[in-house]
Length: 234
Ligand code: GLP
Image: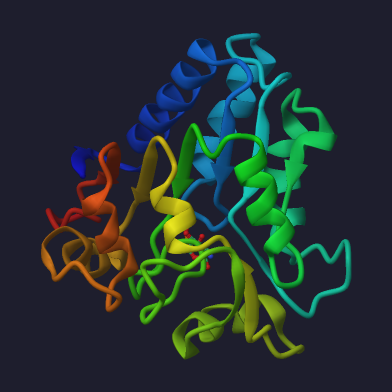
């Protein structure tokens, strides 16, 4: 896994946008995996801006969401599908028929990813506990898209968003093996809150205790982070 450290979140977003645009320039029908969360929002802002300026087109691309919360009604604004639709998908020239998010047990999602030839570029965030997509600590290296129970800390982080409702306790996520089969993976990390997870992903054991550590076994993975996430102070 290559490591790149930039000053702050804005530089990380610019560099990540450059990578996405380069992939699309080389392969206009690229298959992309895109995460939710706060981290990629600056990237999505930048991609929407470049699209408006005509610098990039997603017209022939395919986008897969990495995961989805379970137990929400279809169209719930707190769903990951809605979040991605608002942050990026609805702001670019992607064919809505080529935006896919997992549902239920996730088998169709896994099959569809395989049918279109796998990810050309998978963008990931990292959870504070080292999760990637919703592959929580303990996830199997060979796991595929499936229904999962969320870690207590992950559920807690969503409590404010869902109040007064209880946050969902289950999700459907692409698996660790699904992730590691991507031709290229770029994991984004910004802020001091991610420094401990980044340190474990980069120099801890490569095992299920920190699923992000498995990216070190990938032939073309990049961890793109800011100085704070790299533990170099804010
Ligand atoms: C979420 C998602 C992940 C995401 C991570 C970090 O729960 N399942 O795909 O990368 O947690 O989120 P954030 O960027 O908001 O810290």
